[in-house]
Image 1 (tube, rainbow, N blue to C red):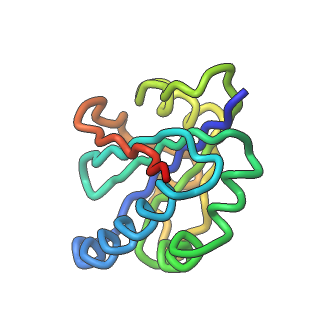
Image 2 (image 1 turned 60 degrees about the vertical axis):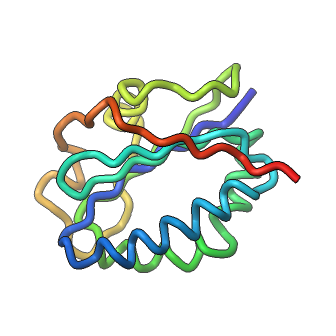
Length: 144
């Protein structure tokens, strides 16, 4: 069994992109070294929207990652920077990455909105346009 985590973040203004990009670089470096991290990808969607997909050995490994280091430091900023943020998780038989269409389907059906200070009108209902399904970048684990 593996544990899949999907996040969707939409920045509410272009001015947040530089600091968001810096935090994204830091958290990506952290996730690649995290114990129990198997594979992942990031999708730069339209309209300042970003998706992450990570696959973990188990939920405990993912929780250790999110409660430490760069990820922990970045999370409070997202409440101010984003007008939409959501997350979903599930277990799967393999460590293969699902498709972005599956990530979108799961987000809409099983996801939950995260707390943001300035929510969009569609935030609570996860009412957003479908993501672009191409242009993702892999986040391979760093071994050794």
